[in-house]
Structure formats: structure tokens, C-alpha cells
Figure (cartoon, helix red, strand yellow):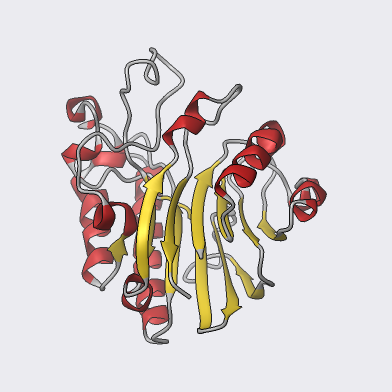
Length: 260
């Protein structure tokens, strides 16, 4: 089973790109972020025609997450628990049934948090705390669980082409990276690094200053696997070439394969 994540940066603009990549990679489950549309406006029919069941948790103009799955989606649950006042659409969870049992998928779009020193950074850290608590609760179920999405966290200096460019950015702050390590300490395995420990792995290139042409990228899109999922990990990859598509997202798909 191939499970992927991709921040499409406006699904209405990237429908054709997304369909082209789906045909090429043929993933079983895909978590999409930054839909920038309400549920009713999501181009559901195009993806259903491509063989996917669709669940969305959208928001007008901003945010929004979706799960596409070749298998039926069960127990679909929007919103990250822990703050009933949070109206931002950043989390969607569902279960799929496989021959070897249930696999739980969490699609997330973690807050950016910039500029630091503002309520946006405070919100980012609080959201990460909620994610850690929820992840800990889900681990108690002892089932394969994958947290897939745009984490807006650069885990280590080697995950940026030019780390010095990010020292004042929320994505690279000690508090953000510290909470990332808390998630890892719960027992999660980051799929890309588990399969490829080389330098120069990036999933995002800014539209500005020729970042793509100069390969000035960062790695902020991650697939985090619970122990029961990590035990089934076969391989993982980043489809970097998608950044070269016409009218591309500034992110590219990240995927892993697990045995089912």
C-alpha cells in the first residue's frame, strides 16, 4: 500500500496536476493540504472518477485538508481534539480496512506560526501540543497509524539547503523542533529519513528568488508512522520532479509504502 501526502496549495488550480501525479504514482491513500476551498467546492467528481473515495475538511480561502482513498473511508473525523474554539480546518482522520486489519490515517496541515513573537507562533505551539496529546491517545490503540502532512517544521539543519536563512523563521525555532522531537519520542518513525539518510532531500521550494532553479529547498512535509506502521515500512520517497510541472505547487508529494 502506497500512502502519500501533498500540500497542493489550492486544489482548484492543481486539479490537473494532481490527477496527472495520481496516475503516475498510483497511491492507495493520499492526504492533501491547503485546499483553500469549502467542502462543497472541492472537485470531488474528478477524483472519484479516478477511483478514489473522498473525505474533506475545508475552509473558505485558507487551510483545508482531504483524504483520497481507493479503499472505503470509515470513522471519518474532522478537527484535532483539544480546543473547541479552534475554527481552522487543519486535521482530518479516517480508518481504512485492509486484509491485515485497520490502518488509521491522520491528515494534517500544521500552522506556519510566522511571525515569531506573535499569537500565530503561540497558536502553532499550542496546536503541536494538541497533536502530541492526540497522537499519544491513538498509540494506545496499538494499530498502524500514520500522521501525514505539511508539518511546517524543518526538523534539523540538514533539512534546509541554507539553514541560516531560517534561523528567524517559525519553521526552524527550537520550540517547533522540540515539539517535533516530542512526537518522535512517543515512538513515531519519520518514513523518509528511515529509508534515505542522504543530504539534499527537500519537499518545498519557495516561488521567490529562483529557489527551485537553485534547489534552495527545505523538507517540511512528513509521514510519521506509529510503531505498528513502521514495522510494515517497505520504502519511501519524494517526487521532486512534480515541482517542475506547469503551474506547480511550491510543495511536492512525499510517499511511503507499507505492507498490508
